[in-house]
Image 1: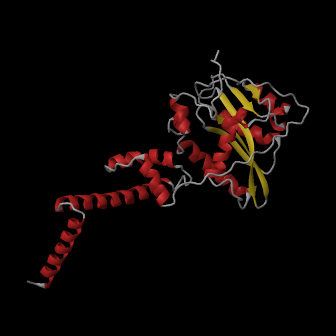
Image 2: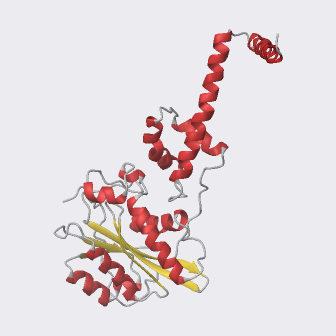
Image 3: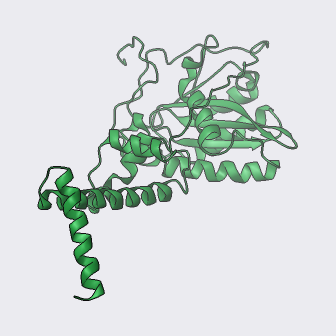
Amino acid sequence: MGQSDRKTQKRHFKMKWVYQCFGISKQAFYKRLNVFKKRNLDEQVILDLIREARKELPKTGGLKLYKTIKPELVHNDIKIGRDRFYELLRRHQLLIPKNKRAYITTDSKHHFYKYPNLIKGFIPTAAEQLWVSDITYIKTDQGNAYLALVTDAYSKRIMGYKLDDHMKTSLCIDALKMAISLRKYPNQQLIHHSDRGLQYCNPTYTNFTESKGISISMTQQYDPYENAVAERINGTLKQEFGLGKTIATLKLAQKMIKKAVCLYNSKRMHYSLNFKTPDYAHKSQNHNYKQYRKIPILVNQ
């Protein structure tokens, strides 16, 4: 008997001892061993898919991540439930920690007219029925910059934005001009909703908005849920796209917001959109609007 044969025989004796210790047959032992090997290989494929998915959207949460890679899992005949998927993320320290949100008090102490809230109980049923606007700050090494956003409430699509080193009314007007230029349904009756900040109440802004046939609506008190979609978008851009960190220059921040809006609109899935992207939801318009807080609502008239 050669040396290699003796080694093979010795290995077989060891394996026989192992499955006899477990009180199972040889076939059952090797079946379990193959299942274990396949599970390890499957997990490596899953980890590779996770890393690939997070190249563009590094802060994608567990559920959206699971939905993103599910087609590839099916294609590779990999079966894994959400609980085991979360356990895998936890084991490899791939869960996204939750950040506390910071709210900035809106300066509504001014003499300009404050419009009534037109959207209490209003549920948009299509894109471009309701736009929400807000301003948030972006930290840079050169000082604070300010980001004005206009978002479609139904599709969650960012329609317009402007980032600059000032909070003048022109900042908000430029964001609104971009949004108007990108409208897909110009004949849709549209409401513009915002807080009662100085910029949005300024006649320069309100006159421009109304000249475009857009109705104006404003919050009645500083409750973030009165402008929940806008508040949510602010937090998402900061937490998931790196805009919450201190950025070196204004120019770099402007490049980052341009890329962030593109990725947000075209790649980021939303639970409230049945795990579709804002671009898809804006075009297809086949989902029911979901509120961020369940409150009594009125039926649209």
